[in-house]
Image (tube, rainbow, N blue to C red; front, side, top):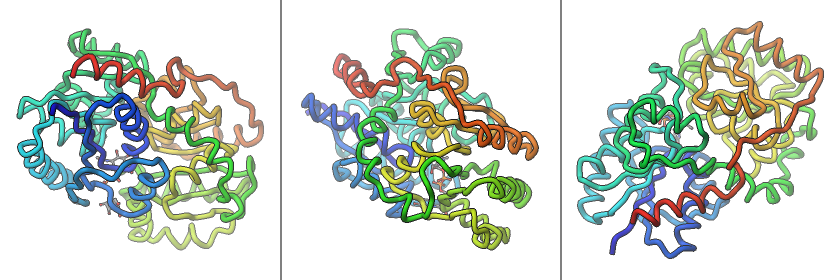
Length: 363
Ligand code: UD1
């Protein structure tokens, strides 16, 4: 029977496929879940399956970590074997990770239709691996589901036929609204010893911020400065922990009483922290969107964003990586924690339904 293969590989994919799989199931549309294994640690993968009620994958390709070429190639080889055996009519990929582009390439060459959810986002920064993944995936896609009108504009400007593009809203926000009540019962604040509303939550994992001693050193200096003013909760991505250790910064972070280091957290505990933070500082894409939906001030520690709507219609400020600029912005928010809560249209918890309406018409 004709079915759609939904692909998930890395942490930011899991909160996107969860509501979509539930809606496909609810509408009796045959689907299989493929986990590429790009992320594999319990707290980078399994915890999300449990908390978001995602069914066991039909197949785990088990690729693991590697250079970009090796990881992408391993996913392609194993996903091609899967496609030849199972013959999906469509695949659905989300986001912009290596699993997204690898599976899209395989499907397009086998004549399998590709749907990209979260299509059209552009940072215009070709040094970001995710930007390459986004552009290539969109070029290969037959159905492009966008989270915001800038996505439609970018795709039209690149020559994508308008009938392939559909604005559906932000799928992450479906999961966020679903899980907020559970986050309210989380014990994470007492576990970490922080008080609601009185800490900054920080996440850092972009290669441009953590992969050299200079860039990571500058981030550590910034955190030490801010820790004089408020407690900082810093869940460490494995990439960041490895680099901090390699460059000799882990001791500085660990010995600072006001910097509370944590392992990568599950979805519910992390949402409990983000929804009650005085300030979020991040280089993540998804967190720019989640803070916008939550009305929590966010400083994005990058020179560009593929999610400009979180600035024009949300709580995000792009502050770059300059130490002085970041400190000024952070201290001004901590001194006067007032922000207007705004949320882009269609970030309403009903995106999965709109996606499946589109998919059902095509299958
Ligand atoms: C990937 C995505 C990035 C996304 C991020 C979220 C690409 C190109 N990058 O980056 O867009 O924002 O996921 O986390 O796809 N590691 C572990 N355990 C794991 C996974 C990774 O220890 O379960 C370590 C390994 O040392 C690995 C490193 O983290 O080499 C980086 O993992 P990788 O998947 O290559 O990229 P991310 O930095 O996680």
